[in-house]
Image (cartoon, rainbow over all chains, first blue to last red; front, side, top):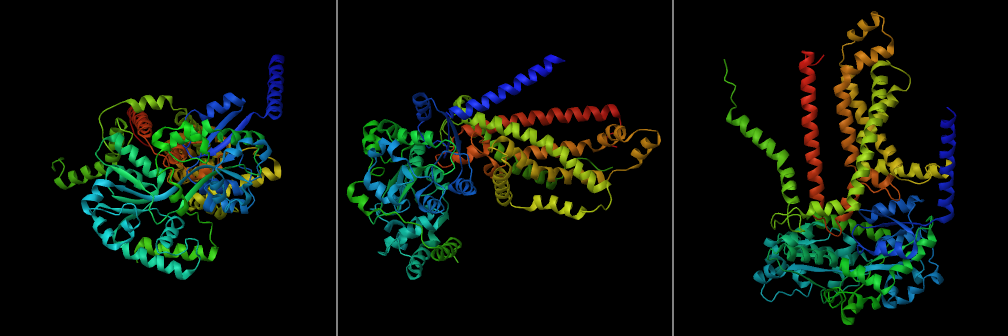
Length: 366
Length: 274
């Protein structure tokens, strides 16, 4: 029987040793991000370069991640929240730590213009760097739209916000994102009002416009339109750039003759940012800092953008991308278009409530 | 004597019922052999998604984790749920009985989000108070799943127990059997179908739970539903269909085997059910 006790002790001792080494070495990094939102070999390259083992977990939405961050002790070292409204309020709630900028020399690679825009959520860019960014615009089935409206104004929100145009497109389907914070500022901007306005009177005007085209809208949904556009089941979707590119890629892969295009409307539209940040209670903040420095290398950022077809904040990375991505004006818009893009910081709670109520009215059409 | 043929109405009902149940599954299986990346557009026959699936460590790892969690959860839930059912049916009106009934039914009606969030907050505050669980992962997901699936098991077993004829057990007691022998040789075989049903229910509840697992999980514990939902943002491909097809086939084989096993058992006993 003695050997049994002996092995028991040996096993215990070994467990203790492993625990001790794990604490001393700490060569682990826990990342929490969307699935497939990174080039396939980025993690492997990071592991090879630093010897840090990456544990990559995925979530289904900013809300899930936020709940875990707010509850505390999530165990993650890197999370990727969207700037508005998530990063904004998470920073206000104090769940992120400040970046140790002295250990991230590659911060110099960032585009200062973009970082200035995101500083509305993160003053002084102290907590986060941009992971990917894009726009909300019009995805459309070029042939189906041209058939119904010759010389359709596809480069303008007139396409959906003018009732006479919307009426002609009704039979083939118009869709909107199901998110008032993504759509209502665009409507305000289209009406010539300030998209950042939190005046209930402005909101009312936007609601009236949306109600005027409501009969022609097929549905409000933030993910279904990808497949429906690709299949030719809907014609025009006001949606996120990356989603429309995905629909485009799928349609061309399926060779079903559906020609999907994306346009950034000339009136200007919303720009969005997903950002990398380190939670305050991250178990491995130093490894996380190394990760941030790593992803800001031009060749790594370029490979990631190439894979996911979203723009990154590192201008020097363009030489590591295929031409379809870097020369695509809908991914990397011109200076002139960039000037018209706006980001909308979280508005005050009383306005948001009104906005949500208006959105419910619009959605239900009553 | 009435002819045993099916009337057109019954036949139509049956066709409708089977279509309703099986059409989505058949579509899913067909599209797993789609050559296109699009889940909904047919572009020719191909088995490439099965090949890709075999190399997709993220999905396979998540599927294996979900399977482990569901299995362990099912066993634990059956044990705890059966004990709860016994207490409710056999112990008479003990102190705190209505509290127990409420705690069981509340887990059935509580929305997943609320249950998940409260479990998350419980784990976080426990960690602050006593240092356990040190980090969340597979273990915490199992605990969260047992919390709600044991309630389902309790309901299933309870209804079986309540309808049970106690005279069999009393006869066994009269013949000198101890409580454990009675439980093992008389009670257990009689409630076995409900235990199996409860086990399967608990397994399924755990296997396809997204919300509660999302809250209770931690680093390196991503279950299958979490991976699939996360893929929605950048596109689901037929790999998911391929995996679902494999699961459907495995379940079908399991059901057929279990069915024939039960039938054979019933035949040898000669009586069917007690």
